[in-house]
Length: 590
Image (cartoon, rainbow, N blue to C red; front, side):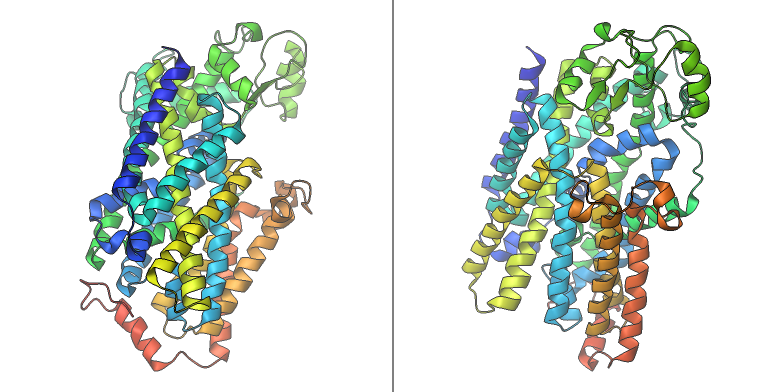
């Protein structure tokens, strides 16, 4: 059976499973649509939250970033993981105790303000829509390679799949579908990682194999990788970063952004009790750790495999002849995500750091190299890894299904957060309070359909790599929703004016800084400054600015609140009751 039909078999079987679950778990009320009826078991919710949180950026892009960025890219690993710890300890149990359907619902009631609710809706839609772009980009990458279709056709297929099970089942359908997707994506991630670790180090556990010895050379794997990349003019793989301020702020931005992302927070509204929210958070951390501790091993081994492919006899020997390249290179060249340009006309592939002037003037000049000739998109490394390592065809089919599962699971969660904010917070709580339950359910399904259409369009016209776009979404969520949630739970003094002003100022300044460097509304060519470190203010990348935006949000909220009347007594009592552990067994609808 050809690789194409094996991929079709795996992807088709996984889609059939998702459709079956959606029909079985069809939502019949708004409570089932928004919070799956509120009776999801903590372990099931932990697994679903893991799939919701481990997006295409986690599955597809993170290992690619670690492969090409080395230690410097570990900020993504630390930030995303640390953010979930923040969410589990500081937000999830308290928000569950409050007993609401959505994040704007909490902000609107806690700050007794329709304006605060509307600002939260806008912030949520902005963060989720930006995040969805990354998921759709990831889905396009996976479809374009494994189903041998163009990315537009692939995205349309993905949109139809999400439309079916998300619109039909709401949170109830998405929850059980995400459980299936977690299992698929974890098997897809771990099986190739185990095979590759076994091939390179003789150890089947990737997390240990990364620190083991490269079987072919007898040298520790990371030391071998350091030697290879420095021989090609790159920085050491394990080298420290010179701009520590930017790395710290990037890590913090990802942490507060993760803790503020609404599609993850609303998952904790689906369990029966507050204690279940804590238990569920612990299980989620366990399920996430399985993939996140494997990603650094996958990244380092992928980089080693690529260099070994281009330099099969070592750097001093002739490089790979392009006409004799392995089949996986040809496959990815067809997608446009791997490019070869024969700059010196010798028919061979040269892969090195041509931005290193010293290397250009010595080694490259001596060998007659005219520049780096191989461009590898970070997003393809995890998907291409089984092919690079010559693993069996069924492993490649499995990772195709896993990549699509990762993209679809997070996309569905984000789309639900958007549709819930529109149908519940905008229509039910603001525009038409007398709408019936049936009418609200219909509004939620229509909102979901419109959100999928917009997300599909943005996926067809993505502004950047999946992980970069996702990082911007984290910055927006971190600078707007996270401070409002924290202050709503832990400060009785913050009033509606302070919270609203904090979200507007923090979010606006963060967006302006991002647009200055990445283009206004991400439109290519509209950036005011070049997005390079020399142009960044105080060396702070636009991807790292979310932490500054969050700090500004806190400061503005405290200043405005101190200059305006305190919240009503009943609201202060409400904040006290949410934090107070007594009676924490059951959620309360305020």
